[in-house]
Length: 113
Length: 114
Image (cartoon, rainbow over all chains, first blue to last red; front, side, top):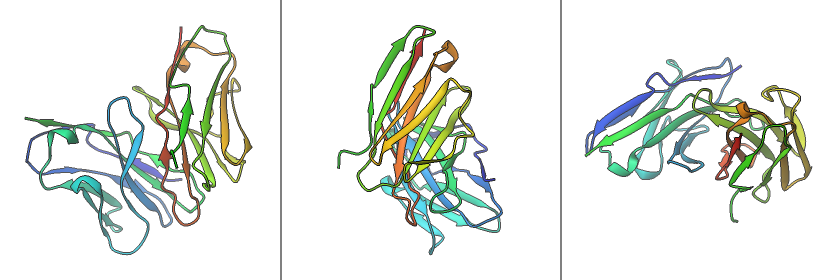
């Protein structure tokens, strides 16, 4: 079965500084990978996804992630964060087209003015 | 499309009462997921359907929980009887299924059982 690990439960970072949120997964088969963002009192919104092809994936709001199969990682990065990026970020994995999507525990990103 | 629509947005009920949460999928989506989110346990998958058929309900906490998909666009999650430990935010999500499992989430139902 798949599982997702997000090593950092909380990440504080100053405004305009770069940030990396780490995600590692375990699976014995090929996977699809996702990053979602959740703002307070809202549902989850997709930031980006990797289905196939280029291992560097660009998403909304200036975020990008790189799929590294050998290290089973899918870390999320942004070169310069804004106050509005303060939110909870979830990494997720699914196995096949019709399989369930499993979420990691989440990383709380706090951007400090 | 208006996206995934959940109702009600907030529900407060007394312990022992029956609670029904509702979800309308995005038109054309084949997969439906119910998740529960709490501070202690994070985001847990309760059950998911594909083409109206329950595929995996291993995340359903106990027999008090049941979910149905009476048609391709609508689902319900019922808790009977409800208990205080069921208090959480319940999310419904749907996905296209065919080659892309991106899940589109509703706004959630915040359930409080007192």
